[in-house]
Length: 333
Image (cartoon, rainbow, N blue to C red; front, side, top):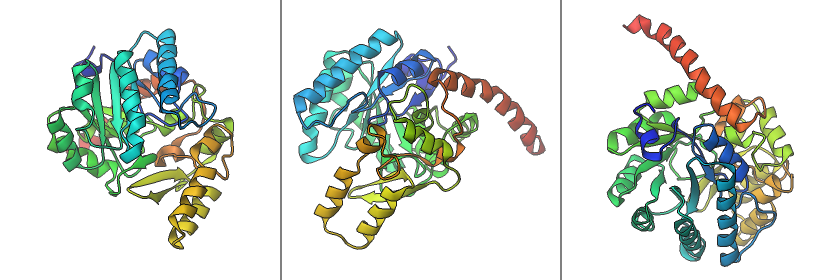
């Protein structure tokens, strides 16, 4: 194994982490990515056929999927912990309990303070990767004792911080701010993105949307087809309280932004989100009128391959990419 801090930390072959995607990254996708040498990450609801607000059932569903992953692969994998705020932490508490009991090797922690679960997870022997959106947050995560930080640029899909720092700007800022390994994500969909991320100071990359359009993803076929057909400025960021979400443009994003910009009551906005959530797109296939969390890299996606083959192709293309980069840089040498 090459001397790469992320590979050594996580005991993986390639420093490519498949980002957790709610309703999308279930056991089959996780096992395929981990089996190909990366690190697959289980999403909070991936593999479910319905929405539940039962805390115990939420935990047991996670446990069942963890056990399924272990039947599919012998390689390391991660589980996402969405910390949440207020009452929502009852779900993350249960997930933490389950992954400690199941001795999961890695946790990807997001949407919350690194001080909430880091010590508890590390005491259980679990490696902690914490998602951040600024260099300041990365420094606080390092102080809290996390093993590595995941910085997500403004291009990234799904939920993220309110800043507009792009991957190109954020990655070197975070790399300069901390001594621990840095994983970066946002707009990375091929070997060129991986090379760029490493050049900017990252030790590894975080890829979500590219893996959404793979055979093993839990995404409905209509969602995968919508991503493949997308081009150019095909996503938009929408404000959601304390966070932003980047979604594939469709009638959902158009109607949501109209409601938000018109000053609609919070109850109206919440009701609209509930009736058109990612569950309705990813599981029920309502890709045109429901939310599809997706990054700007969607415009680079042209097919729906096997996830393991995709990772292998990216790794293979990196060699050719470096050769081309060397030719282009000769003018400076």
